[in-house]
Image 1 (cartoon, rainbow, N blue to C red):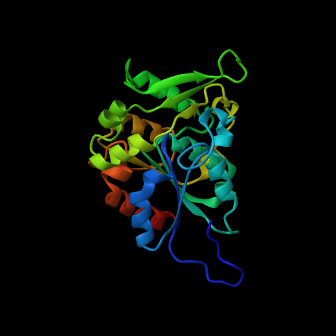
Image 2 (spheres, helix red, strand yellow):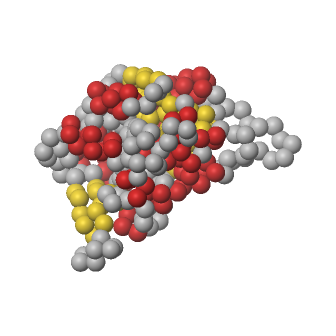
Length: 273
């Protein structure tokens, strides 16, 4: 990550750290990252473990903490006194929450863009448990869940890969066709951390650390994956969270409304930093 040397003037503009959703990578932020950099801001779009261009396979990622390590390390490497604007999308909100708990003093504001927003004092898996009650059978359509590791129960794990029909109908239905095509070429399987200690721990997120960080929920108003109502419900679990609606945005606001999302991120950063 960029940093100013001793005696150098700290760069102008905000520092944004962008975190992708399940099966995606840093590439999913290319439109927003371009807009933010063109406006003079510093942007770090990260690949989580075994995602995007990062080497490794999903089944080799031993824990959710390891999966989120690139974000945790990036925050830990910030220069003293500098804070980042964290932006998480979809499943990336879970990694955001873990980073807020670990480094609350390094986060100016956390922005959840149609993202999982867990509650302090509840397990991270609480989000998926609640969402499971909302969706119906066959919701994930042609997405693929596989178990790897064979008969070795200690090494067995489940992976998830988004299906092209699911992506077209529930995630990218308002996004440019070329971005959907790009995504179908680049998505990779992600591990489902079903029995993970961090995902299941009730004391992982505390009000004193995770709950102390300013946060904003950006509701994708045309999301056909988790509904705008469920997005607002997640925000309601977090006292003090600001809620902003993004009209005309599907589950991928960085593709369906990239300029509007970029402008909103700068507006939020100006307010909280």
